[in-house]
Figure 1: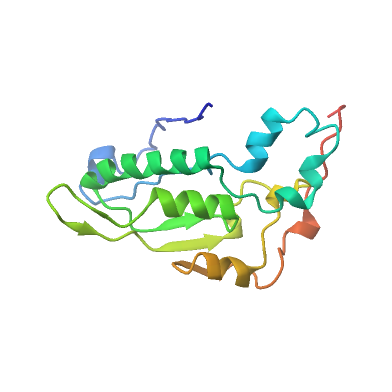
Figure 2 (figure 1 turned 90 degrees about the vertical axis):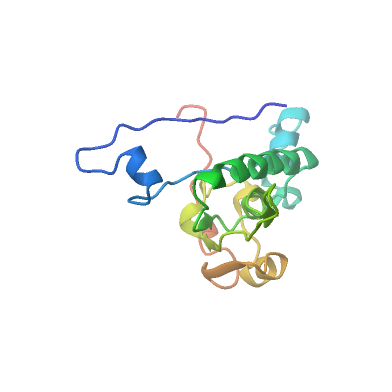
Length: 180
């Protein structure tokens, strides 16, 4: 199992707050986290017929959920975030409305108690389709109806997600050809 993580330092433009200023409250820190391992990820690596038989286009992987390994990866995020919260609690979690992203964010940013016994509530969550990785022909990238995911994730604000079925699915990109 491999977990891809990138940490990149971005050179700030003149006039932007420094890292010290951000830590002092004069700016905002953004953390981008992609979803942990979903069933579509696992099976694309392990099933020889995943691509030849176009399993990626079947309802089996529609709005794919996390595997047990993916849940463990998300828990690792939670542990790291608890340490980072000593430097400032996240004020908002913006998340894709896909199930695997919602699961990753929910596990990764839980309510928790500090070693000194201080209870820290999870930050508010807002789902938006603008946070989606991409929309194309793989059914894992097609979200469930908004009302269905609202029931599964009642702590998330879904006002930024269109009601009903996936509004972006009919405008998805085509699968790249071998010549692309």
